[in-house]
Amino acid sequence: MLAMTDAAAEAISALTSQDGQEAAGLRFAVQEQTDAGAQLALSIAPAPEDGDQVLGTEGGARVFLEPQAASFLDDKVLDVQQDDQGQLNFAVMQQPEG
Image (tube, rainbow, N blue to C red; front, side, top):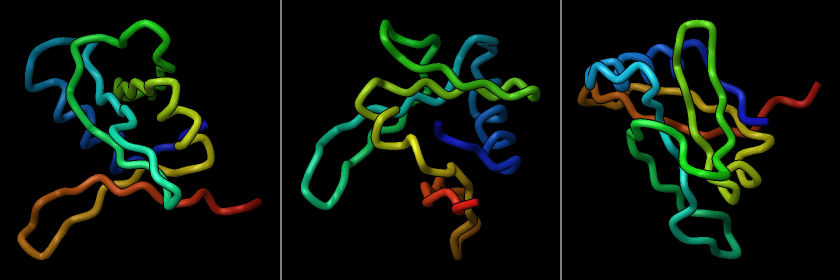
């Protein structure tokens, strides 16, 4: 199952609370699948769609995973990183083995 860092959970909570919709979440969907992996589309969704896997944190961050995305992200960690311009970007990394 996709894991989330605390920083990613805080960023998701901040993004989804801006709309004032308590049930909103960050939705991952596979846009295109290639031999090298999958290209993911991210969006703020007011609610999960039918078939979505729903992940939540105690802090209220919600992530909706479309079935293909859930399968692709099963062994990954969602993090947030700051670029040179100070923009926050979501990053998906391999979960450490252990």
